[in-house]
Length: 218
Ligand code: CA
Image (cartoon, rainbow, N blue to C red; front, side):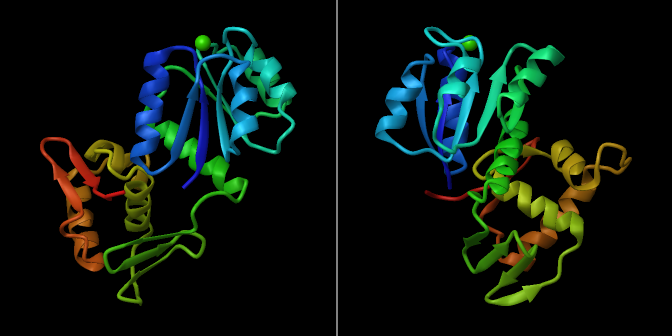
């Protein structure tokens, strides 16, 4: 998983992001102003920086211009103006997320940026199952297992958001899209199949009244 620097002066938000990213297996360092970015980058190397714009000491737009290392940046900001977005991206940011955002959206954007910069994990193993994200294949005890595209999307979401509860609605939306008029019962049926096919009966937990969580000990 990746090493991520979180630059956000609102302590509660910074802590929340850190907690969620660590749950899925990333290693995070938090800093709370623009100058601290450079002190931290002298000590450590990072795969990704989450960078707030309105920061004490040094503005996010200044920070990104002074970073000399080749490390992807995602702006996190309360400012949703199009001009800000354009400027952020023009300054070299890889993505731009407007607060408030949900954690699953943040995880997804992070994964996309890491994949683009070749820093994402390509294979995930748990129990006797192995998932290969680049070939989009799944194996159980080294045997190739057949999955529908929807099932693969469900597996992928559970893995990328491991240890986080995902609602049935969210999973339905991820695998079948917004416009699909199906019922959340569909999710249950497919999760049941995934559990059986991958031998994940004990690691895909049912979360009471909500949905499912893939439990991975770190
Ligand atoms: Ca701020």
